[in-house]
Amino acid sequence: MAGSKSGEQPGKINSRLENLRNLAPAERLGRVIEATSLGDTERAAFSPGTLPLELANGMIENVIGTFELPVGVATNFTVNGRDYLIPMAVEEPSVVAAASYMARIVRKCGGFQTSSSAPIMRAQVQVLGVTDVHGARARVLRERDAILEAANAKDKVLISLGGGCRDVEVHVFEDTPVGPMMAVHLIVDVRDAMGANTVNTMAETVAPLIEKITGGEVRLRILSNYADLRIARAMVRVTPEALKTDEYSGERIARGIVEACAFAIVDPYRAATHNKGIMNGIDPVVVATGNDWRAIEAGAHVWASRSGRYTSLTNWEIDGKGNLVGTIEMPMALGLVGGATKTHPAARAALKILGVQSAQELAEVTVAVGLAQNMGALRALATEGIQKGHMALHARNIAIVAGATGDEIEKVAAALAADHDVRVDRAKEVLEKLRS
Ligand code: COA
Image (cartoon, rainbow, N blue to C red):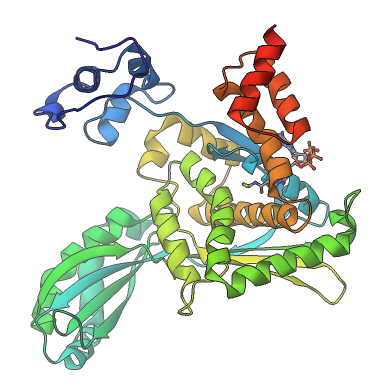
């Protein structure tokens, strides 16, 4: 039996929903609605949109429905002389606007220039119980060819596409809480895949051979999300002329961006927010294309700490001619084949909008978006402040929360933005006035 009509908070519930796994999604949703005493509004909130329930049910476990996010398209991007429209799935206002705005400035100055390494991932095989870890390391490296052969024996498709296990590294930890430890790394070219499944399978395949060579016991066999060999880079060079606004000179804006970046370079408190702003651009592209945003986040932040101190993922400087030069370089483990990229209809459509031909091209465009996003946030922060643009766009959200519908949304949002007072209670007042 469905509970209340809508909206009430569930009281005390029993989370032991036995046999949920064996039900159809609609039945599961019924059980959850019943257990939480929620109602028709919540039932409808999980209704599938473009992702059919059947497909969703095949993607993860205990599916009860789907969850939608807005998809916006950032405009104006030119990367390596080619124009791109950028699909971004994100809930935060002003992200798409800021990326489009910066891309408009950058395109006047030749656009984004990018490059990337080959799509190389690492798998780790943890080895315990070896006392002569350095000797075992030497033995593993001597057997490199045999390990590569074993790793490459299974995935014929990857080999035929020019990928495969390329090398072996051995990392030695003489002293850990459980004694000496080794990590044998497989260095794998995964071509257009994100690569997790590929390298995990390879790691599991070579494990018995590693045990034989080292005399130890293998435990973990899994990829590393620190994809430090799968790097994408982007660069912009922007003239002061292209940067200037009615209120600020281009030189002032360029200097402000460089100073803002310097803050993130030296201070981890600032770097966390600075890099979050970069991920504001990157994650929405990763999500829209059906890629694994947790993997991208994990890799980004370890990379940002690689010197031993957490710091900025970007650099901003002024060149000899007074131009603002921005660069970004970071791991970018994105795929075009496999996973949700291929199964989710919206991800497939997003990839068509992007028109990228390889995972490397996708990685390069994605970091260009991250650089644009960083530039947008730093420009606003170093001049008028973030709240002006962000809150003006956030005002629409607040208007909706206050109950505005149809034409009322823009009217209430405009009134809130004009007063620089973007709060729900104020929005309710404006709405009441409007309606009376
Ligand atoms: N929708 C889509 N694009 C928008 C937009 C909107 N509502 N508002 C601005 N833009 C983009 C467009 O590309 C526009 O140029 P175009 O229409 O010729 O393509 C460009 O920005 C400049 O438009 P303008 O109206 O002059 O922008 P603005 O000076 O009022 O700036 C912001 C508005 C939001 C772009 C700006 O304040 C900003 O970048 N703020 C920082 C936001 C941020 O970093 N947010 C991250 C989370 S806090």
